[in-house]
Image (cartoon, rainbow, N blue to C red; front, side):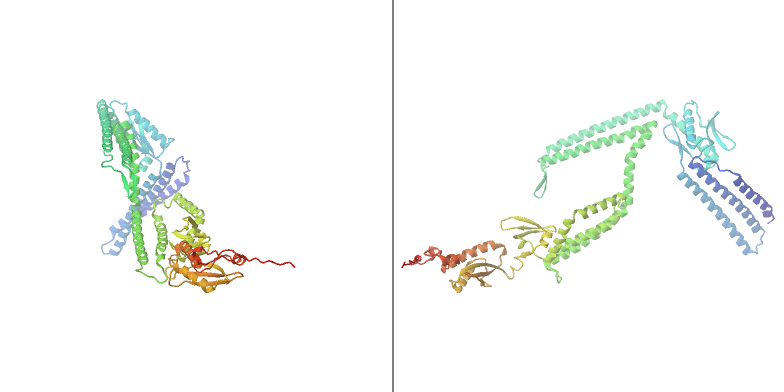
Length: 622
């Protein structure tokens, strides 16, 4: 305790001196980042040293108290030992913080290299010295080392370490090579003496290396080795060219023999000659690629033989190694995302397979869903497939390389803009196509009439509907137009209930209606594609001024043959009416004729038929 009381005034004096020196010190202008960082570091060091002094005195006091305590007072002793342990831990923690601070400063500070004879870096300079900046010091040291190679009998031990007031100078005879200050030691995380020894060893080894590399035996050996590399490289290129030439000759000989071309089903992708030509082009590319690779890898070997060009060797190799390494690291870093994408693809694939199985079962009729028709299965599957793929793209998108980059996002927005505003008309047709599918207006092969177009449906897509007319004209109708027009489907009920075909004949009142009914029913019965059951029937649709309108109606299950059916029906109506002596002609003509023969063909008239005479009326004059 007395000892601590004696040291207390010393602590007060040290603290007062420290505060006084901080007040009196004037800030000096800093000309580099390193100087600023070094000032900050020195300030932290001073604060740490001051705290360390106080902690050391405290430890001395605790050790004295522990030593004078009696063994019986164990509780007090344990408390003091715990306090002493806390101070030791604090000191260790401060040491770790100082080391971490030095490491962080070294990462962000600007260092200037001292270069050797072969463009290699000997050591780095961080701090300035007097009026010399760090770069000036590095350049000056490089120039002084450059002069050392001219000394004939150079020895590392001839470099002396001379201690001055604040530095350690590396001197050769009376010339200073470099000076190591306390700041240099701080930046290198060592002491001045250790750093000076390290620099002396580096400089000495560099001079010895230069003298060894520039000796005549070494130069002769290097030249011979370079010549050997050149010969081997030339031989490799020569034999590579011969090998490719031989292989190309053998390939041409196999044309039409083992090389017969490439066919994909019935399509000939390459005939034998085209296939040989394509393979020869690939071989030519591979030959020049191999030659360039041989030359490229030979150059670093040649450069690496001589010390002056060894730096070019590492640079050339780096042109390949660095991109390959970068790609390998990139692939390795991207591997978790790639595995995630593969898992997502597998899951979605099996989901699509499950939906496809349901679609197939519905189409075959094995699975029936109330209110859901079998012909809806395929279009519904296609819609769900598109939705699943869109959802898949949304899920996978964040895992794609570069998906978060502004360029990638900009391209995505641009494509979305083009799709939205460039396909507005197409989207309306697509929506109409979907609506038509679920409205079940018609299917492939149906005879329909859309607007003024009549024909058979040959194609239904999301965008258009194509119809073949009875004249074999292919008419393409946009689905939006189909939606805005009325549609007549002649085939939808023809299979089950039959399609009623009808035609109208106008006959004068002089013909009994029963005879006309019988003639029309006989004509329908003679028409082959009209059904006997249900039976045809006749409707008298109107009683006009000069004639009666008779409409024959008959069923058929061949709506696609309407043109042929109507033609046959009309011809049979003519025959049946002629057989019954019924003239199909204008009632106006029939009422006004005088002495004209019947329009019924002679083969249908009786043998005793005579044309009616002309009616002549003579008026006598009084």
